[in-house]
Length: 310
Image (cartoon, rainbow, N blue to C red; front, side, top):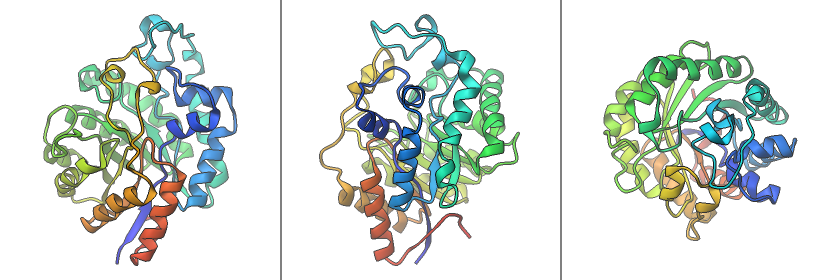
């Protein structure tokens, strides 16, 4: 059998569930501010479940998302957002520090989410601005993380810019693409995942994330052509609501599937491993119970769970 790196699961929805507060436009970043220590609890829950990678709660810490309502695509209708851009670096470092309690059990992956908005390649900025923005975050994260994980990449252009920024540091770079939920062979931009694999070939790992588990096999078949370690971590949403994609909405517009319990999710992930995936885990609405069951199923199937491949 094979070695498998076991990622953690979703952070934002798990924080909202544990925090007992309604979602805000700042999503997981708001709970980092309001409930210090809660992110660390989630990291520990995933490590206890068997995850060998802790993904930092930095996905949504971008300068534009920390600005006031007048300039923020994510500001929900009727919600007045304060400008906290001056806390940008402080928030990044605080989020990484929340992973400290699990460093003896997990690699720490510094998450860098898409610019503009999730699932929106049309909002991605031009090359210079994109590489500069990504590089600023990567430069802050690199000294304190083991991996730079660029997540939910919606287009080939965004992948190029992510890779360029990541390669300005000495950290391994993992590129994780988001596939079309109806046609997993294509990115959210409509471009073929097989073309994205040509960019991913220059990274240290190629992944698919925040897509329906049913779409992932086609995406993996295409991304496997990169010739680097590959894998996936799907989400548990019924669908990505259009009002969420368009902005002016919070995570409350997203619904969790009722047919994707721990065993059902593990069925999908084990099938990805059978396709050759060596990195698996979960994204939004995939929690510690899912990761725990996935660990058990991997071990039962004879796979070795490891922190590092090779």
